[in-house]
Image 1 (cartoon, rainbow, N blue to C red):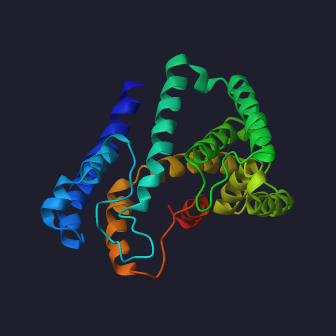
Image 2: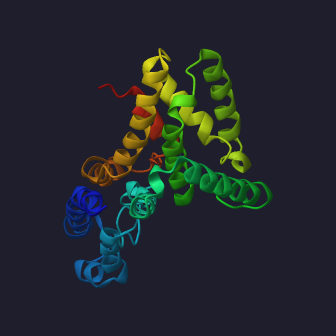
Length: 255
C-alpha cells in the first residue's frame, strides 16, 4: 500500500505544484484586470494554492473576467475524485478487502441502492454540467468490480447493443445516472477489442479501470493546458470535461 501511495503522490503532486504555481505567479499577473498589488493581496490568490492539496478553486482574482466563464483551470475538477479513489483503494488494500470479490460486490450493491434511491427521489448528484465528484468515484469502482467478475462476463454483440442503448437512456436522464455505469463499462471494454474473446474482455476490463485512474491523475498534460485554452477561447464558451470525454479517449486510445 505504501508503494501504491508513493507512486500516486509522485505522479500527481510535482506536476500539480508546477501548474498551480505558474498559473498564480505568471499567468495571473499577465491577464488580471486588477493592479498587481491588488492581485497579490487578494485572498483568492492565496486560496488558489490550496489546489495543490485538493482544496479546489477555479478562479484567480481578475483573471479571464471578459470570458464567458472566468475559470482558470476547469481540469482541476477531477482532483477530489482522484483523491477519493486513492484513499478508498488504499483502505481496501490495507484491509485486504480489495481481493475479496464477494465483499466488494456486496458493498458496491449497497452503495448503488442508496445512490439510486437518493438520485431518483431527490436532487442528489444532479449537476448542471459535469458529474459530481462522488459520481466519478462510483463509476471507477464499478469498473473495478467489473474486473472481479471478468471470467463470468461473456463478450457478445447483442449484449453490447443492449448495453449501448441502456447507457444512452440512463445517462440522458439526470435521475438515472447510477444505473448507467455497468452498461457504460461493458460498452467501452467490448469495443476496445471487438468482443473477440472472454480473455480479451477480461484483460480490457482491467485496462478500463487503470486508464480511468491514470486519466484522472494526468495533471502534467490536461491541467497545464487548460489555462491557455481559457485564454484562447475568450467568449466562445467553456470547456467542460466530462465522463463521456474520458471514456471516449480511453476507447480511441491504442496500445
